[in-house]
Image (cartoon, rainbow, N blue to C red; front, side, top):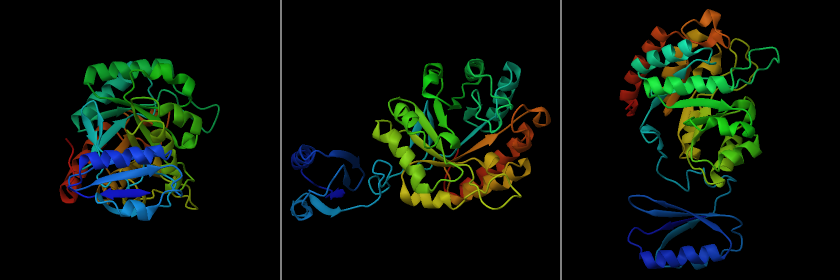
Length: 337
């Protein structure tokens, strides 16, 4: 249920209404905008008398909603969420590129790539330390050592780091990580999501390859319901009958999610196609569709990469992508800080 409060409502009356709602056993999400205040009621609202609330002088209207996600719902928050990561802002007109290798391989590799992507406009560094792989024989990442190397690259470049977590037991190792990524395979690992909800770190959730947008938002809801509202959503391609690409980029997910939620939405064109040559056009499409950012795999030697070399672009190619994306952003009214 959503209660829209009139612009010039008496603050004492508003506080009394909020207290009354809480006494009914409900939680209240308060969103204060420039022109109105919205109260989002979370819990079983069937016992609430809509006519009684509508009759209050401070209330403009009452709306019942059916969507199961409340904290992540656009109806509760009319204004876009801006996530601030050590001064790097995503959402609300702020567009950012997260770039780096699929896997951290060595100190020289990660530090060199970090310097290169920073020069070309990336404001966050990605790199895999723990790697979920389809094959048990594939490279699984450097794990704790990889996180240490990412921290070193962060010290040298100042770029906040983004890396994936596989298990809640690894959380003590993620103290220096700025954005914890929940991969597509873990999108519905609800116990992990609840653990991440207790942190004061930004959580980036990738859509599962066979999950709906509502299911993605319900995963975000798990994190937010546990107290952490700094969530970024990532569309990384879904599985379809098409075999020409690794996955199929659901570009319509961007404008659709923008209707459904106030949370920032980014695109991962590298995993979406699995083909390096498609990263450039898909990045432009993402920017044009209204995405708040990109996550791009960049490697200095893709032919010899230990993980996902065929979908990784070289630093000079990333420079071209970044420059062309900025041209699109000028048209759609967004900007890279």
